[in-house]
Image (cartoon, rainbow, N blue to C red; front, side, top):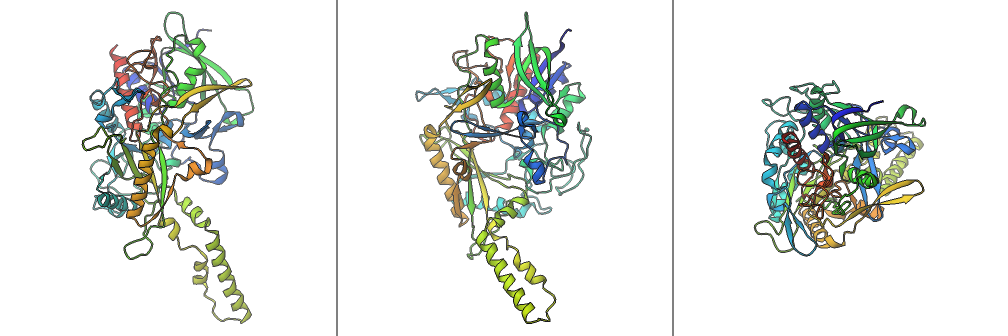
Length: 562
């Protein structure tokens, strides 16, 4: 039987895959997008303990959920699996990579310019921001609750006290029903085109649930824009299709073989399907795309020796400001669950910036939030306080029963059994990302009949960077008269955790320097592209999503022009 054939097959539906899918289909090309995860309709993101437990990705254990957790020799990584890729779980932040940061270190103390520069990406940044509905958090709005968002106020004040730059970055979130209306939570959005799920969306409810999937459709995830537009233009979007093998065809083009999963019958043998295309675009993320090329290296002779190199965590670090106090010495309300996950950012200068000091590597420190359920968990963790309250409450009730008290209205006593909420309301997570050293390496480890991806990476070469951002976190917490807890997840797991893995297929000027050229095309393999975070030759610095999407738009334009 002849293979089903397309102009382009795109593996992955995140920022690289969704953008390139739309650009190519809009131009009339036949495109097939293969996404290993499921589609998530707003309202379907799990919240119950039982459903959340199964919301992880591991088909070998009949798990077909959204969170994909990777554990390596010296680090951990959390990414997404689902239609829309990382946009399903990211914090919506859209920041352009600073122009002076488009350099990479050569390992000998010298900096080399990226093959792609800010000027190349500028019009593509514009295009992506328009489709993603980029806009800052309406902190300065005179409408509604936005101007009194506690965590945003705290970050603004901290930056002012420390003499640091502060900004409200663009977010891929809808706050108003249309472009001419004021922001207002929970209102029906007037979309200019239908989304592929066929559901209505609501403006941001300020509930802090962005990172666990927005059930209101307020978050402008890729399935609601780029992928919806791609489908309208004729793209074939296939979910639960896990790509296993890629190989070149005689003449030109590529064959792709994937396993088709069925979550409703996970124990049945998966169906292996093969299709072909003139062009193959890998956009499965830094981990997924690099893994596919490493696994399929025997069928792709001549791949650059740079494959697997220049892995970076994008300088990810997590800290918590806890037990904040106000000017009167009482608890300071920071309310991390109010608002979208991230609302503002403090900027740290780089040695490449005006006024930067030698050796400094730039960073962005952002406020963070989480769903209200986490506040209950934080309060429940205060075992001593909980036991004390229950003991006092029980003592009062026993005394009332013993004395046959006539007081029958005991609502206040029941209320006293609950926590006062000070511990959770005076806490604020601090997220840092920046220019760490991209000196990690990806490789394969064989265990029986399975090849596992591994990453050899150490924070030691970036020690100065991590020390600096750790100190800044402490200073920011200090302006809130708060204690700081540094990198608690790394302490729990005894290894760093990143949500922004980059590199593995770095771009370069030639095959000795990189795996792909400035347009993402793999050296020595015409028609094979990598268009995601894997191609970044160095850390991006700010949140990577916008730069990855802009690069994909830039590369797609080149594909269409050639």
